[in-house]
Length: 280
Image (cartoon, rainbow, N blue to C red; front, side, top):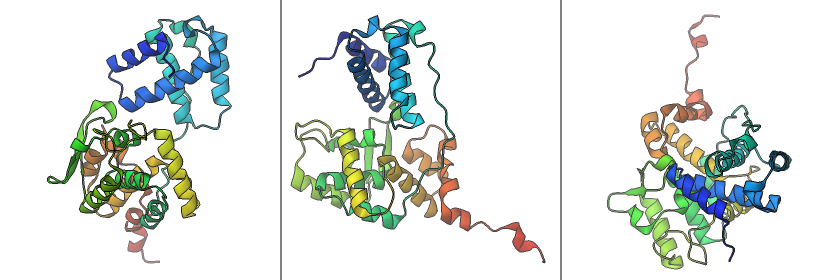
């Protein structure tokens, strides 16, 4: 088993001290492991030119601005905080991009994707994400004690920014989870586990979702966050107010939630144009 280098261990400790979310810590550590392998020597001995070479390598990869920002943030945290060598990453500028409106799946498309999984575990996992609007890292870290069928809620303990919250647990989702539990019996205390008994891997789950979306034949590359977007948009179209959606999604500001008013075709189509009041 590979043992993390001392800088990686210190980085993890510093990220925890900075109260970074568990998912963010995982992403930063994975990014820095890739950098360490690329570098081929102790990271505190890297020159600015060698770090530039890694940044250039990242820019050649088919990844978006958000993922690049994650890689850059991991690098800057490592050298500014953990290694105390801020001058080596002074050249890094965070990439910006106009945030496009999220692609929203219709309920029919969601049903086709969820029905296309060949593995019961991943069908239950992504049914839960769509049924609750959880982020993928929040879902992977759920424990059996977090499921409260009596109160019909799920306790999200590993939320972004360390803010715990409750999300609704529908009767249909209770049935899905109980059926999954009877067949899988995941390793305690986790709700979804790998064969080794650890929380399921983000990337493995993403690949399972990509395969299911391809089988579903809907012509879209489906990501876990698209199911979260679909959850929020479909709630809005049912008449649920934005404040309640904000609380369930765990948004720190309602400004993050208002994007769903821009992507709900049903909400937009229901607006009455002032043109109707003119006599032409």
